[in-house]
Image (tube, rainbow, N blue to C red; front, side, top):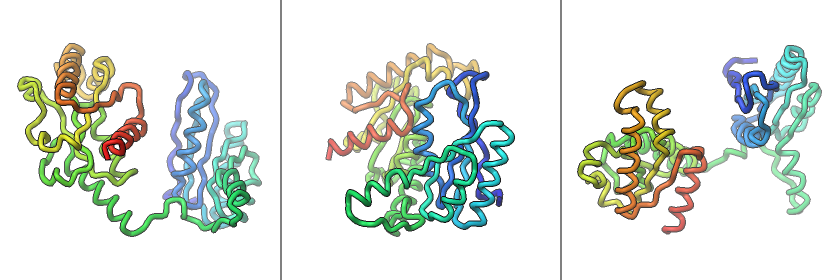
Length: 287
């Protein structure tokens, strides 16, 4: 199979080093993102197993299906145990080919499309690529939002903040950048982010550049212990990464946000997706 259509395997460890291992394929006639997102959601419910993940997108012809089937069979032979396969496939002929392998097939569309057809009394379009369909305007807006997030990352620029949908503030390494990018990529929001730095703590107030946009401000915080671990990886044994520094900065940042009346979210034990959804909910409540 063309190497460009097969994502390198990744191991997701939900158990110990000696935990049992299973291979799981995410196979799609499109990008495979839907299959992977749904599949990972299912895997997260099973602890104590190391899952080796393989995404194979754009399986949109019988020839590619046969190549994919061969890959599945090879993994089965190598591991001695049948793999798991999550499918998002609209073409029934291709789907039937993939089912010839000895694997547990989890067909996402089959599980949901048929019941929906029965309930709605309408046959689905069965069209490849509809999952990620978007209008030209939506596409342009999403790209513009991503460019905005990159241009306004980590306080690089304060230009055009009036057009921002969200402005995130918080201590360095608390998750502002990935959250901003996720908001732009998944929701098309123009998100800027500003780190709270020693000068802000000395003045005990927010950066002057963001004060005029208080209605767009949201804060992120994190436990000092978690922040210490993250900073240690970036700058080992530095004052920047010292636990005492982390404690002082987090306390000062929360004090500022509390006094300024800014809603903030704790990223310590939450994923980027969870934090982003909380921000979206807060925006909707404001509106």
